[in-house]
Length: 57
Image (cartoon, rainbow, N blue to C red; front, side, top):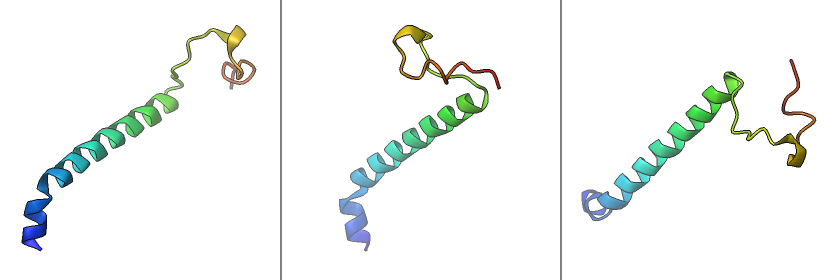
């Protein structure tokens, strides 16, 4: 078990770093969604969701 761990430590570390980055992105997206922020460029004329994204709640 320890020899396998020693042989794959770089792969495990890179995987953990990528997992942390993905989790941070998801948390950031959820926080922005709860604050009613989006990545909308506000060019509603060319947006297929123009009827739904700027509705008042």
